[in-house]
Length: 210
Image (cartoon, rainbow, N blue to C red; front, side, top):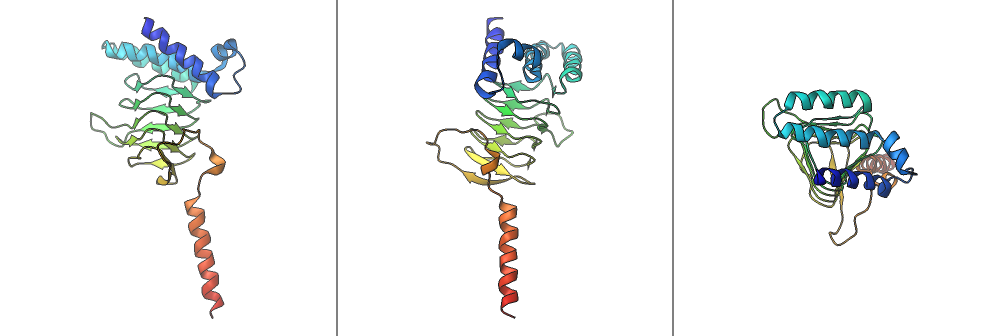
């Protein structure tokens, strides 16, 4: 029980640390669906491990109706997990999430196989996944990595990487000695835009030689 309450307390504190809109404890208790679903998941995951799987699934389904967030009871979630806004987030059964991970609304951590066993992603510590990004399959997103909004990631991502695009490509890797930073969407590279601009310049250069 102490470990359970400690986890909930850390989840609560992480909202203050990461969301400047959080003004007081009562607002978090009443208005943060990401916090509500985490309380539910901490309970349903315990039921799942105790082999009360139907009850766990039923409670998680009720929670999905109330919060708009679906977390399978079998998913393993670490400490200080934060879901910002959260509507439309889906986390599959064999997902594993480390400590200090942050997801934005619409994120899907999904599977690509009908076979039993590990079929959902593993997110290591300090990972940030932007809004409506999709991470599919039994892949690993390394420590301190960032997934840009709208990306579709289907391959492993090394630690300290920034990924954007469909399919997701590593566009930046920072030195491990650098401090971890949050996902700044306004500063993300645009490899597809860069490629189009390079092609446009090349076409203009060729037309000028005619």
